[in-house]
Image: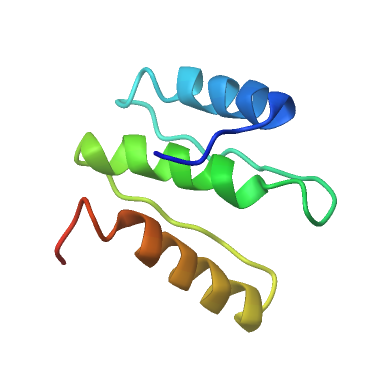
Length: 84
């Protein structure tokens, strides 16, 4: 992924990705923080790792507007890697 994370993102991403090291165990991490703290970037990285391992990913959002924004962001970021 081309976007460089800041320190807190990197720590959160490392924690989530280390939890994903055993992809045989389902997980349900919750990322929380104030608006603008780039939680979506951490979720994208975790989803990317799971999808590359052949797993399914679900992203839950509190509003329809946020769901659409996440859909567009994920689609844009994953487009170079997936054609479906």
